[in-house]
Image 1: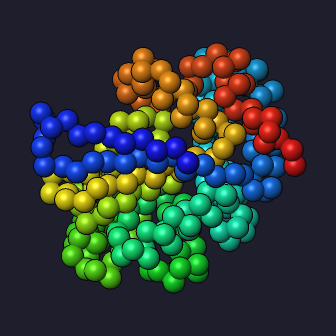
Image 2 (image 1 turned 30 degrees about the vertical axis):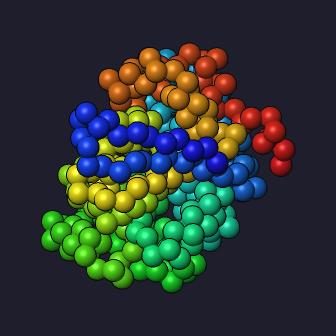
Amino acid sequence: MMLRRMKTDKSIINDLPEKLVTDCYANLTLEQKILYQQIVEQTQQRLEQKDGIDQKGAIFALLTALKQVCCHPALYIEESSHESEASGKTQILLGLLRSILCRSEKVLIFTQYARMGFLLQEILKTELNIESPFLHGGSSLAQRKAMVDSFQNDPNTVLMILSIRAGGTGLNLTAASHVIHYDLWWNPAVENQATDRAFRIGQDKQVTVHRLITEGTFEEKINEMLQDKAALVEDVVAKGETWVTELSPSELKSLITLREDHVQI
C-alpha cells in the first residue's frame, strides 16, 4: 500500500484539513487472470488488422474490457459468479470497509460503471448486511436529494455508492471522511473532482482517499505512468481518456501485458 499525503495550499484556502491518498493493490483471482489473458491474446491480432478511427475504437474497447475484468468478472461476463471472492479488488474493498465502519466513519465509493454499483450493493448487503444507497445516472432529482440528505444527516447512513459521472460533481458530501475509487478514471482531473465531494469547504476531518488498483495489470502501469510523468498528466487532462488510444503498438503491448510475476495460472 502506497501513501501520499496531500498538503492543502493555505494561501488559497486555509480551513481544509489534510488529504491522505492511499494506493491499495489487489491481486487478480484465478478467474480474473484467465479472462484478462484471453482478452489480451484475442484482441492483439484484431488490432493489427485495423487502423485510424477503427483502431482507436478497438483499443478503447480492449482497455474497457480489461478494466471490467479487473473490477469483477461479473461486470465483463454477466453469468459469472457475483460473489466477492471472484474479485481481488472486491475483497480489498470489503477489508477497507470493515476497518472504516468499525470506527463509525462514513465513506463514499465511486465507480464508473452502473452495473458495478448495483453489484456492490448486492455484495455489501450479503457480506456486511448494509443497505447502500446508489446515486447513478438513472436517479431522479428527488432521489438524489434524499440520498445526499440521508448521508449528510442520518448517522445510520454510513456508506454511499456513486457513479462517477452522475455523482462526481456538484454534490456536498462532507460527512464522509473516506473516499474509495473502486476503479480508476484515466483522467486524474475527473477522479479529483469526485474526491472533492468530500474534500471541500465545510470539511473538518482529514479525508483519506483509497484508490484500488489491480497489481501487475494495465491499471498499475497507467497509474505509474501518470505519477512519473507530469507532462503526461497535462496531456491527459487536456485530451480526456482518449489519450490511451494514441499509444504506439509497442507501448500498448507493454501496457496490457500482465507482469511476468502475475502470469502463472
